[in-house]
Length: 394
Image (cartoon, rainbow, N blue to C red):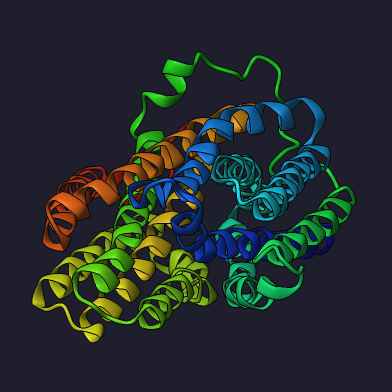
């Protein structure tokens, strides 16, 4: 059962990231063509992030009621709806319809973000970090396939540029839905007694053992989205670097987000998730320093690679810590709070990035990234006893 679940979730993760990266690659380009004003060109991408934040709680709630398999399949169905809406948007040249499609793909992403939790639940707690890392490896394939699908699908449907891309995404979601229905329910971390174990929400979240993983993952994701959204605009619009170069830097960043998953689980097993997360905040500081050193392609590239690696350490470390920060019966509630925090902050980062880069420039983006990173670093150091001496009671 364990290998079957991990294999299914790995393929589903690859499909989800393929769809996401395709939308990220095309969102600004198509948005600029369809939007009534260039200032709204990134709105479809921002609505994708907003949709993810909006659907985190309903995604967790639905899976607590109908199970992981059917819940994940419903999430893939929402992605299919989003892809079909986007096809209509391409054929009718409708900006508002394209925004709606982005919102629905965001809804689907809220469900796919819980693949990592399902993977962690499918193995013994000692192997949770490795399971999460394996699932995120599917993102590497998605990061490579997404841009290819975006480019190659441009001319598949005559008279509707990029409609073929979204048709390909729709097919991917159909495949994902069929696979996810074969997911087996339950696992080593889901069979503990549940009677009388669900605490009030305030009691569950008001503990450092819960706050630390949520803060780490939320700041990691929020800062990453904020900087990643602004960087291509700074490179291409402000500094005049070719669009293809900016796209290559973004692709390098995405690969840097997921390639460390090959060894992040092993690092967490050796040093503990807290130390790995602290290293992630330090790498974010390196990202900021490199960004201030210059505005050449090398500076942007190195800074974005550091951003990806720092995100990986914070995100996987936070997910691993979260697995031990709640009781088995509370897992859906805990995961909903975590993902709402993570993607709520991401939505704020995505929506504010364009404003900050437009009004204040690239250096303002870097300055704005420093306070949340330093705050997270301080909390990790101050609460180091929680992860240095073993997990306290939950």
